[in-house]
Length: 236
Image (cartoon, one colour):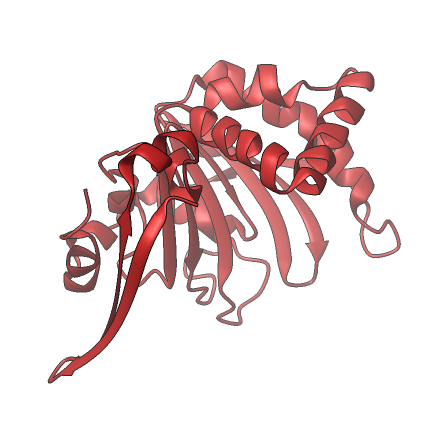
């Protein structure tokens, strides 16, 4: 609603194709009608250093509790069905007495969070549910309140387990140690094993325990790759 104009360009050079988009905002209107990205505060993407250098996709956000609340506020005005669905979920979990997401989980998430799509690869650390190189999805947050995060994630175990088709697997989170880290895992399907752990100031959730293993091993390196640096160099 605050946009005065926009331009998109596609350019080519010896290294490949580049897509650029620029928009011109009316500052007065932007204050009254902030756009989607106004919900995201500036931050330094330090979590990228914990992700694999061959990561397939990465989305980082600063101050996840503040960002999620701002996105919900936007949804209340522009997509009330999404906001109402989230509120119904929050209220349902609250009535069950297991967890209050807004009070217990969001404040525990620390100063930065990231979603990543990581290459599978064959249980090179012997923890994956399959030897096939299937990508897996991962969420991680940094500088978390570890004790609070553990309690909140433990409160989500029962609702998540109940949502899994009991005809596929016995819906129970099991304890296991992955690369010296205490983790919890739930087999959802032959190729998806939902796993989470809280350690070293991190809270991590992945659809393959290999994600926990790679984070615990401390390799990472996405932030040092040329393509990643090129992607963020022009960003604030």
